[in-house]
Amino acid sequence: MGLPKNFFWGGATAANQCEGAWNVDGRGPALTDVTTGGTATSPRYITYVDENGNPGKIRSGEKLPKGARYAVLEDCLYPNHDGIDFYHHYKEDIALFAEMGFTMFRMSISWSRLYPTGTELEPNKAGVEFYRSVFEELRKHNIEPLVTIWHFDTPLYLVEHYGDWKNRELIDLFERYARTVFTEYKGLVKYWLTFNEINNTINFLGKEDYITLTDQDYQDAYQHLHNQFVASARAVKIGHAIDPENMIGCMICGITYYPLTPDPADILENRHTWEKGIFYCGDVQCKGKYPTYAKRLWAEHNVHLDITEQDLKELAEGTVDMYTFSYYMSTTVTTHQVKDTVSGNFSRGARNPYLQYSDWGWAYDPCGLQYYLEMIYDRYEKPLFVVENGLGAYDTVEDDGSIHDQYRIDYLKSHVKTMIQAVDNGVDLRGYTWWGPIDLVSAGTGEMRKRYGFIYVNKHDDGTGDNARSRKDSFYAYQKIIASNGEDLD
Ligand code: BGP
Image (cartoon, rainbow, N blue to C red; front, side):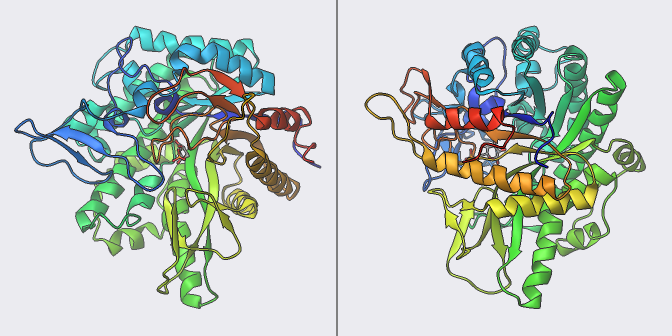
């Protein structure tokens, strides 16, 4: 028993959170490039200038004032501009991953590095060559790349001029981009993910109090998702045609939902939350058609989607080869009024008295990972990958430069244990890539001090630091886990 011999071990990153070089070698901007840094308690802002040239800022999900344009403002700090400068450090970083024993590295391609506005007919050569060099470097170290084609970074031009993914023209533009990456990296990359945490468009709705939602917001969100489903299915089909060896997966933000009480109303609500938050996307991408409960979800908000016969055909023809997901936490669901709520990542629920929470309100629940793995495998019977799991925490650098991050080691081991338990129970799990094996910019808060890495990066929230890399205690712990294929967990 235990993990299969060819199990993939590694780490996961996203272009916009680590590359930096935001305007280098022809790259165009993405929304993250006009998004400021925040903290655990203060939000990130998206900045703009209005039609009179006055600067302003909105929060994620809020609409720009009429006539305003996204803009980089002089007195704001944009952490994604520099990231951790992976763009210039990738050789050093990959060597460190190899030293830990990685056999897989998940990374994403920045769409606007290849197509600066998303509308060009030919890709930017410098961008294409950058990723080729990274993949070649990984291969040199026998590390299999796992590549996310879209990780929250639609070119800003498409957001501003096309209205983002609610516009179905993005399907064709994405197709051009996807075709380029499958063609250019044929033979170098075999494992692909189409859209990162695709379900978050729905999970975001209703999570934040500062937004008052209308039926139109739901309409836009479900249409946005539908267009991404079609784009994903088309990419799967093209990817298989270009190289039949390609394994192409969906990527779902995995949250394990528990009913807060045994009240039957809570049990039903919990089931409906799974459907809306988790199954809706997985069902379409794994089964190639909308589930029966979709009609109920749409009716709740008077949603009428633009779905063509051709779309339905494409969905059926472009089912994914594998189901991949992130897992950080569980959350609770209830129909009762509760005061003590916790909000973490794309979830909000009543505090679970049986669990502990991180400084950012993320529940620590290894058991929820086993629950999720077993539940999902039973539903789809497709190969699974845990492509994100990790602990964001404040780290202290000792005088001698060492970092004793036992909390991260404990988190890692406890999740690896439950993951192995699920495999022993029959789940076909193929790999595990820890989120942020090297410190990087947090997606949610834009912080550097919310650190996930086994490798420390000397870079700080105020933009200072020389980007030097160093090994934390967890570096050696993960190295041991990988070397023993998950057996050495003491
Ligand atoms: C997921 C995203 C990642 C990553 C991770 C950790 O939702 O796919 O991009 O950032 O969460 O979140 P955060 O950076 O907010 O701590």
